[in-house]
Length: 206
Image: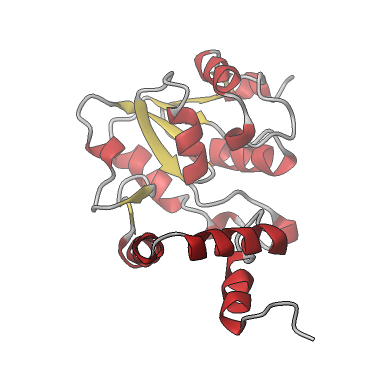
């Protein structure tokens, strides 16, 4: 027997439960909440999601999500264009921005090297990073990657990739606990890690 009194409700719960961190109970609670709201509220939500999915773009310079060809960070003339912070994905851009301790630009890799999941260097936005170092006036690359084996592997690969260039390569201090993802690190700890960054070579000796 179907546990739902409505096939339409069941379908909505099924789709909502596909979202990360949303189980069937939470999905049912969300669906019932939307049913109690005015129709216009649900309509606005649906339209916003469809519009986001269809129209959102990736910045041609840093690969961050954007509404236009270049994101607001890359378009901001007050940012220091000589310092580029390399991160795994957009969530990490938001995490670093929330610290208010960084005023440079970003480069979003779109992942990290993870052979177990079939993700290699060619699957990441690395060629464009090399091109940026070659063509832009960049004096420092900050590796702000997860404090995990995969994050360290990716960092070392980038370090070797950029070693032919006359450029400073640093990494955030290990105030970020080993095994932590940046997006789950509190703003104060991450901010201090950004401020106390150290040369990549030294980080590998610790």
